[in-house]
Structure formats: structure tokens, C-alpha cells
Image (cartoon, rainbow, N blue to C red; front, side, top):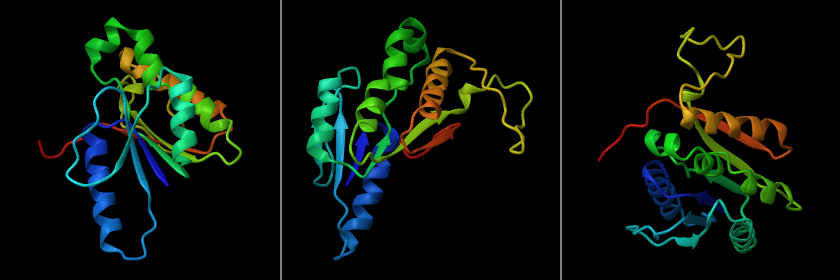
Length: 173
């Protein structure tokens, strides 16, 4: 079972691709679920959706208990730089979802968490970055601050996780 947390631009294309792949195989046993915070997504295919608020531990626990995921792909984010700057507390709650990490970590068999971060955790000084030495995180804005907080949260956690840093996600409108 794969659970997508959040439904936005990237999740829409990931879900469509996974649905296409799983529907072509008669032996596919992939069960995909998608969560949303306020409005259920209108999808061109059938998928189970769940309302879940990353700021509410009970909402998270209930959804995880229902879905019982083996993999959680966290696509939820507060990405508006202006919104992050005007409400850094909410940006931190959404972009560094400590309640989600805690609930997943407390499971008897915790799933793998795939989390999307950003290149905005770097200041831009010293680019290009060299993979042989870790570059120091030095966010350029409140959005980057919140994503840095999540990276630090995951490093300190015992939860198995994969962190992906994107720089600019492009695709069809």
C-alpha cells in the first residue's frame, strides 16, 4: 500500500503514472491512497482518498490506521514564499510534519517515508555543490527554513526515509 500525503501538482502526475502502470498489469497488487487537507481531488481514475490534516495528530493516526501504508510519499507542502513568510509557524507545521513522522515512527512496522525537500535549503553561495563533502544548509527564505527543519527532523528520527531535493518542478499546465 502506497499513501500519498497531499495532492498538488507533483502528486497529480505521480498518481496518474502509478495508476497507469498498475492498471496495465493483471498481477499488480499496488493499493494507492491519497490524502488531502480541504478539498478532495477530482481524479480521472478511481483511487481511495482520505481527508487528513498534518497539523492534527488524531487525523494522521486515523488515516494511517485505515490505510496501513508500506510507503508514504509526502507531497504536501506550503510552497508559497509569501505565505511562508507571513505565517512561518504554519509553514513549519506543514513542511516539517513532525506529527506525521511521530505517528509513523510509533507503528510496529513503520513504512518508508519519501519526503520532498527543496534546493532553497541552500543560500546559493558556493554553487555548484560538491557531492564529496556535505554542503552546509543555509536557507534563503522561510520556506527553505521549514524544509531544513524537516531534513533535520528526519535525520534525528529512527524512521526509514528518503529525502529528495528538487530545484524546479516543470511540466504541463
